[in-house]
Structure formats: structure tokens, C-alpha cells
Length: 237
Image (cartoon, rainbow, N blue to C red):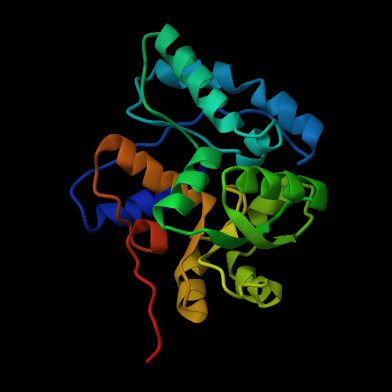
């Protein structure tokens, strides 16, 4: 969240007049396991109140799997609670969860069948798949990279996704989610993947930026953001 979302919006500043500042409040978590994710999510209301004191124009909840591991459709409940928390301290603003943004981004692109790559252990990846399917989207295939350490996830080479995708079944899919996790870097690989596959490609981070721009009433474009941020699929002749 703190690297790729600013990078996307900085890239947008090169082509549009709006300028952005970035502020964060952290929820503690070290191992990407269900128990730590639940404890982390419990800190979200504190974080929303802290950021609301600075009067944000839009606020994003980064951790996709913390939402999706809590229960089906939980992003709606989380967004409501975070809205209430920010309103109570006098700083109401639109709330975007990366989980909800990914679902909305998939729908926005008209995708009905997708394949995804996650850094999570297989049981958590299965929860993510179940969550997406519960929203009426077919998940054809999923890769679980099974990286339990959150710092290792964030330090992974994004260009490794170009190799990872070789073992992802994309037959007949409408969209590839190259990183269903805002912690796992993917930004430099999104458009190369899209050009290679001839399919729309997105990520949780790109979808979060799209949802933020929509919430701000700004044109939803950003260089390097691939399908959901204006980059058309290049089809070979």
C-alpha cells in the first residue's frame, strides 16, 4: 500500500493536474496467518480515527486477506465500521477496502472468470478464492506462493510474476489478478504480463487506486496501472 499506490498516483501526476499527499496508520502483523490477521483487523478502527484527524479525502484499508479471511462479504461491514469511526471524530471521508476494490475492479472490467496469484499459504488462498466466488465470479485457477513472513512478501521481486504466470491456467479466463495482495509487489509486471498474455491484468493495488480515484471524482487513469487504469489490451495481429 505504501509503495505501489503512491507510485501509481505519482505516475498519474505526470499526465493529469491533480496532486496527492499520502498518510498512513499501521496495524501490527508479522506472520500472515489467520490469528494475526484477525488481531490486525481489530486495530482498524483506531487507525481510521487517527487518519481522520488529518481530514483525509479518501481512506484505504490495505490488507485484502484480513478482510477475506474474516467472513464472506465482510468488506461491506468493514467499510461501514470504518466510516462510522472516521465520522465520530469529525473526519468523514470515503472508505475503500482493497478487498472490496478488487471485487469492484473485476466487475468493472466485465470479467466473469479469472485466475489469481497470491503470496498466501494455501488455506488462506482458498479463503480468498471462496470469497471471490461468493461474489459471483468464477475463479478458474489460483497459485498460492506460500510465503508466511509478511516482510518477505513485501520484498519479493515483482518481475518474478512473469515466471509464476507460466504455471497459472488462464485458458478461457477474462482477467488475470497478478497479485491478490497489496503487500506483494506487482506494479512493474502488470503491463508486461498483459502484453504477454493478451488478456486484461490487474492487481489489488491497481484496483484500490481505481476505487480511490472514482471516490474522488477524478479520471481513473494512471500509467503502469494496466487494465483497470486505462491500459488497453494489445492484441497481436
